[in-house]
Image (cartoon, rainbow, N blue to C red; front, side):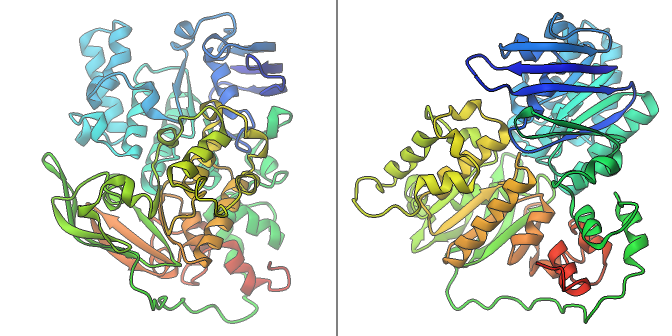
Amino acid sequence: MIRFEHVSFWYSGSERPALRDVSFFLPEGTFTLMTGPSGAGKSTLLRCLNGLVPHFSGGLVEGNISVNGLNPVIESPKVMSRHVGFVFQDPEAQFVMDRVEDEVAFALENAALPRQEMRVRVEEVLDLLDLEPLRDRRLETLSGGERQRVAIAAALALRPQILVLDEPTSQLDPKSAEDVLNALARLNSDLGLTVVVAEHRLERVVPFVDEMLYLDEGGEGLLAGSPRDVLSQIKLVPPLVALAQRLGWEPLPLTIKEGRRFSRTIQPNGEREAPAPPVAHADEPFIEARGVRVRYGENETLRGVDFEVFPGEVVALMGRNGAGKSTLLKTLVGLVRPQRGKIRVGTLDAAQHDVATLCRQVGYLPQDPNALLFAETVAEEWEITLRNHGLLSNGGPLPIQPETLLARFGLSDKAAAYPRDLSTGERQRVALGAVMITQARALLLDEPTRGLDALAKEALTDLLRSWRDEGIAIVLVTHDVELAAAVADRVVLMSQGDVIANGPPSAILGSSPLFAPQIAHLFPGSGWLTVADALRVLRPEIAK
């Protein structure tokens, strides 16, 4: 079905190949997970499957590629689109229409399908991805996760033999991600659809797949095989696998069900940890919102929200897609003005100041990192931020040296690169750097781990902890429960525009069937959320 034989690829003007001597074979009907570090070439490889590489990107291809009996290097993307459905990392990049139903039907209209057939297919995919309630909504009013599901539905409507998805769950809450993956698994098992998914959040996808590809940094090496075989050879593994490797569990468990066979037999070497008490704050909140209401047309997005974040605190703001998390962040920095309620940022009444003034106090990272990228190089991007905040002209020391931040984000070799030519994970890190380089007194980060591999996420976690210890107030809007478990001091859970839970991570995440991390599922009632939590009690002699 899909065969690569000694494939190498160079982008135009690049001396280093994005892919180097890649060979693998995927039979028809397989469900395959592709993973690897950010910038390893995963998106490039996926684009080879439908001809976007090299027809759209340009560049030089060496080796042989066969997809469903066709050579994408010879055939045009128009021809390949009949065989390969493709969902990009940024769903907005492939939208054409304004309404959900129109977007799903667009490709079918271009293919000149009979009207009755189009209606049947549209209804099928809307039901499959739980989009029926959104069919008449304008795309611009949807949350990031809802837009992702619309993009998947549009790709599925043509019923391709192969479906390729580039990080399809990166903006989805755990339940929405599970729904999408279950839908893909049904298509794979019931219809024989060949599915290829690139993902960093392996804990979500591994239980569904039967083949796994690991692409090493620089596209210079590839491991292929069953998930258990590949995971036993790499460092970027889910928490369950990481704990199993440290404890010597064999065969390596891939699901919580498999892991519970081992965890039930373990006798902890000590008392289980008591839940952490709520953090006592001597200071007043740096950001405080009271009774905030926001309405978009007929939809009330925020319904009297009370929220605060203190200096030296990391708050994870979580909830289902469309719960109002991103709207709350935009409201805190003045991008959205509430109809009712009061917001204070530092000593400023948010209603009395513009966005620029508020953002001198607060660094804000939107979901789409491209919104912050407009310079010619990464170094210039950060210099512009420093200049706009008056930090280059005041003669004083910089909050943090750009070279130091480049190294911390693994971008030392990208200082002269054009930001929009980077991978999604690399662009995310550049945008994070632009927000963090001023070391504002508060940081509001909307899905900061989107596109980040495990090592980059670990580096981000270390940075967040260090800035928290320096007294910075940090709010993370995230669907990444493992990140929240690792770094949050407090979790605020939202639903339908209101706060429904607020407390320490062990209390909020540990007891939630939806938002619990893998270790909490593995040891229910223990209060453990991370691998380190479990090892401190189970194997203190090997815990770090």
